[in-house]
Length: 598
Image (cartoon, rainbow, N blue to C red; front, side, top):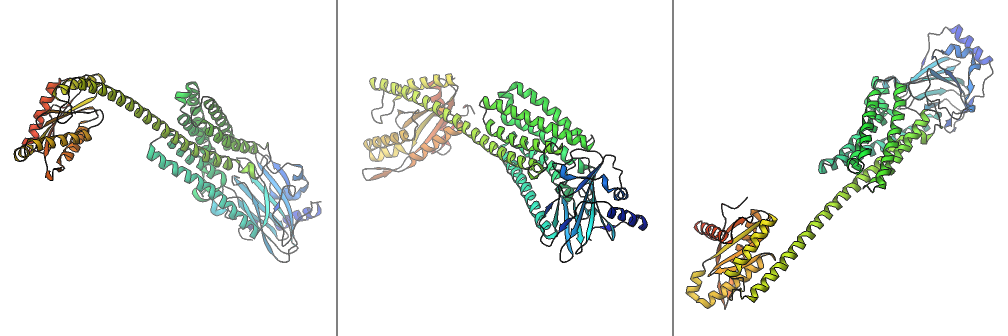
């Protein structure tokens, strides 16, 4: 049989005597295996014997077969946390038409050491497995303890299975034909790979979100997934097979450390995600203390005896889940964003952790759901937490949009107030004939009055005020060549274009001749003022079509900025100075006065 070996150390006479004792002793009916036998669950089929001291040897058991007890009286083959070793005995008989290979599997990867003694007429075959055995030395390369059996037609053999482990002694065993086991094993690997792929995908996705958004909950989530994956790799046997196959000290520490450290990081995630510092100050202080305690438990799992470390993991994990669940319900009551999904997610993980812990203590049966409870609960929990993070991101986006809308409403209100003020001012201007009769813009008197009001508003609100003095370039030749009437039409068109470029809150005015002024309130920066001036300059450069005649003028614009500290006269004088600098620099350009604030 591949992977098994005979035990040459037993003297042949003693071995034959022991075998005769076995044959003479009453025995359970053998498990008969046919060509088409389906997978056989061995609960109720095997006999068991507890060996608390771990000193029993095969010869002693062969000599005293009556010490075994039937497993039919037990709920299952889960023995919980026990000291020493557990022996299982099974008789098998082949009724197949030809020699066939079978496989015996114990569906629990975390067993430290499992030895199979296959006793038959030809002697004893010894096979070994377990996660504390280097992977290369296992009789069958599999994440679970698996053993090959080879039976000739009509052959009867007695199997003695010795298991010892610092962790939970879960010995649920199944006998398969070799082909059936290969299919079953492949399915198990695929399921575990899908679970691992899910964790990897969720971790990478939220890592990218963290790098993009720099939101701390995403970082804690990635840490939680990564550390939790270490514990799961220790639980499902993938770590011992692929990452630490030499079966060193870390093999028995990965599970308790990974789960306990994930519990500590889960507390940090909860504090950040639920913002307990703001919404639940007292609870936040308790969570800080809980983090210190659980982090201490995680470090202790590296030093405590393995069995105590696993029990510490179970207790601290369940206590942490209960604490976070209680915190989530309190936050849900206080209408904290995302608390509902958070509570549901941790309920999933708590259910899985609770089932795993109860199974480890042999308080509930060991089956598919209790063995894989942690994986099932954690996958649901992490998917829900990922949804919760997405929901939180959407909530933050919604809050920002609300803030932006509120700001826009305030801006609209202020614009409305200024529009109303301007309307009142315009009414007063109309009543006092303060408009320029040619262009319809405010005249010099109206400009001076409105500019003083704008200066006071700028000072009160601490906002920038821009005064632009616009002097036309190339207007005098038009007047000289085509007359003042056509020149007046040009000025009227220039005024219309200036009004078109101005905002509702701006005040365009004619200072006199071919000089115009634009007063702009609520200017955010010098750059914005320059952009407005450049837009005006572009509009004024466009050809003017008048009476089948096309003319074109330019402009030199001087800008001065103020926060309301200067008088209107001084601002116009400085804008005028900046305008002359623009003319000296080549005309048709914009110049900001040097004394303007940055």
